[in-house]
Image (cartoon, rainbow, N blue to C red; front, side, top):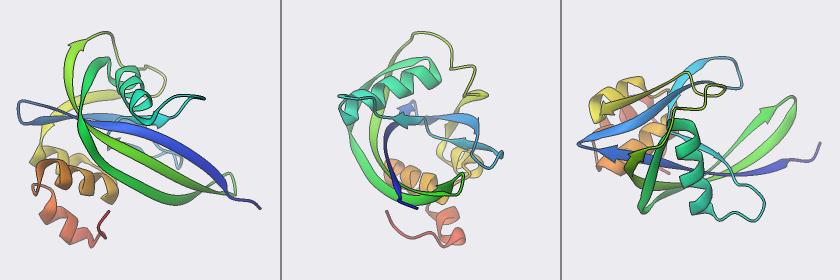
Length: 149
């Protein structure tokens, strides 16, 4: 079966020493804490997609504070292999424009780096947090033995 290709963008939103997390149900049905991200729409740039997805998922309009990381990974959805590329941006909140997407997002939370490192479910998110904060998630990341981005 041919591998599907997907492209997504997201943001690590920071304010006052805290980052904004979203609580979602993943493809396996597990409840996880992660950073907001989503697919690119036709004709949309990586950055526009990241800003749109963050606002849709969190209710916060943000501004770009620079590129953070590029990630690629593979997984299986419904028996079909998927290759996914994600571009991540540093973001700063401008204003609260609404509520999180009630269909996809169970909860949002501002957490300091240590709290975020305890909540985040994926090693790739811990790598993003470590890059964003330049170390706070490094201890947990080493314990998980995750490779570098």
